[in-house]
Image (tube, rainbow, N blue to C red):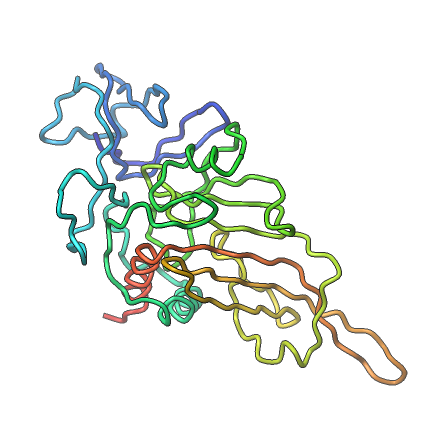
Amino acid sequence: MVLTQPVKIKIAYGETVLPAGMKLPVVSSDANSIGIKYMGELQTIPIAAARFEDSEPPNAAPSEIPPIVPTKPAAAPSTAPGTQLQVSLQPGYDSRMQGGDISMRELQLLLSPHCTEAVDLNSASTKIYNGVTYLMDSEQAATILGLPHSVPSRVPVATPGFPKNSLYYIGYDGAFEGRFNRIYLVTDTANKVVAVQLVDEHPKGRWKSAAALAAASWSTYNFVNARMRASDTMRVQAGSKRQGNVIPIETQLYQRVRTRVGRKNVDRYEEQETAKLFIPIPFARIILHCAQIGLSKT
């Protein structure tokens, strides 16, 4: 069964919106509604909000959610079809969107030195962060990281350059690496982890001079939350490197603070937020693929 329009449902820890195009297993149906299984829970949705696939009768038995495989073939196809996990993306995940050129260009600049664009659907088990691997179930990842399972609902990721209508994040508060106060598990439509981001939302006592930030010309300082600097009084530093099969992207946002020293105004910049995004190489290649299409003019 495929949703033909967004549907809001209630879940154990709040509400979430299932996007149009999402595939779900059918448990039961009648003239007005369809019973589905989502994240282990039974849900009822209006029959007008969905359509049955040709091979699926209205009263189909529950089944596993298959990955939605993009039309472009994988760069390195699996030697055992059907046995290897694949990233689950919505149809049109790489279609062009209006706007977002700045974030897409910055993603290209940060990722392209370390890998090339491709639709790499497989490569499960690539290590991402502290025991969490690529395409690991998000609940298993939370257990490994010692995170609570009673959390707010998944939030859609709308960052230009990331696969369109295909990603969500689950946020947790805590203490990570001695300085970060929040962690985000970024997941695909099947709730499998594709990236991890750490954020320090309240840095204390970290300053830089205007000279030190003279070359800081970036705009995006938090890719998962799609946050960009709001004015010229702010500066963003960004950098990336490759560590094994993961690319950590580190960003810092600074706010100008002007003080009077004698007859002169002296500008210093106070750190407002810092983020560290861990992207495995297979998913970085998909992001580069999406950004390349998004920035194309034809």
